[in-house]
Image 1 (cartoon, rainbow, N blue to C red):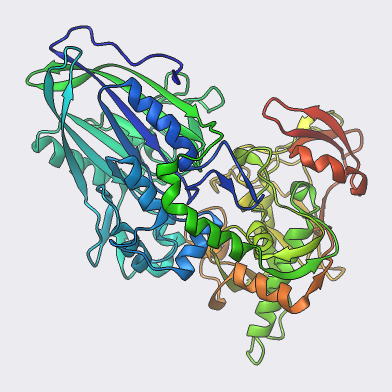
Image 2: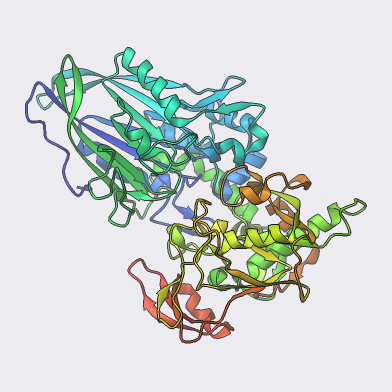
Length: 619
């Protein structure tokens, strides 16, 4: 048995049904149980490792449905390699689609990252699916093999083996912000408000006789109160009349879970949103969502009488052969590609201390961005402006766990090293900003840290809800962060304390930065979106470069040209001294071997319950 509790048992043999819903989400092209950045197998990720759990869950329940909640096609080096090198279609299915075909998914929806390689790639990839794909708030200008809503007719059996007809309606949703993150798609698709699209979809499915309506929401668990164009709309979606259960995703959390935040409409212990059964099964195939329903016949249809919800962790030592088989050849080609040597580094490149101001890998990314922008602006009227470079650590623990850190040893640099240093397929861009804009940018980044009280010991440093990919460091500037001040912004960009000023002593080449002083800032295309933490800074600022090149390709070219590198670990910023004050922050246990090389006054403080190494930093 794999479940913490058995499937629900019907009370009566003829007027009740037990139905199990299984769900995956945010697989991000982790088809196999393999960590490409660490270059080793993993028992805790990958659809091929989750497959054994799926098989056992199906064996326990007579009536079962399997859904996927999107973001399956991008997010691992194999996904990037296949998108750039190999075409797919009905005769040669994409390995992720072939794996899902082998598992017999009943339906799937799309996530925002499924659009990262463009509509042509998505269209070819979905053509190989032997399961329906539903996306209710997506409106493509040209046909995609996607349905707005879906009705599954199933013959399920009760405890006596008697068949009963059940009509399951399926809706699918992705964040409306996808177009802000992928602006090149704007001429080709529209993405509507999740809640408005859901209301239309619910009405259609109920008219068609749906007994249940399942919402596959590639959307996070957010406020209960509805708001226009919500990104994290799963709770508000569950509150709509006519929605029976929700599969959530996008934010890479696990739900239900004791560690998940509670809130209005959110019961993280029982696993309900607005009183409806719900799951969010992690990311990369780390968990399998299981919702067990007991249905009762009412007024000629079926309604939920009872339910249990779980998110089961994946732990399998072997890949399921039927799922792994279609991906093995592509996996081997990916490994050969990643092992190509392009240069050398004279020191380790790790992100274990990125959040306290030391990350040589981040410095290398910033150097490559500045190099590219400087060359691209030669001969333009922008070339005389100082060029700065903003970069954020993508792998710095958090929800990814204590192994989710960049860790490139000194010596040979390969394409795998480049993928580890820069995870996402963003384009390199540049903006013209002023000194005031830069200070605002850094204030938003500094909101990652919790406020501390001077003179107190061992206070928590990091806001766990603030993702590290929003912690931009601007190479070319020096500044201090005053932790005694409250964060000006929340993780979602909301203004919390307008009078707070954490960023001080801001200088460029040893001189104070003037409010109207002009600069060119190298950044990435994700920062150009009209939503998110940095959107108010970016809005209406002159875009001086969008070359169409991916930052990862620029980094590869920079390393290949330089051949041997030794980037400094100092990120240019520090915390303002607060005598008698210390903070605790978490990093990967492997960071212990680098502690003697740190300039900061840091000492070990034990291993936390989640497996992170706790460090004490004296301010």
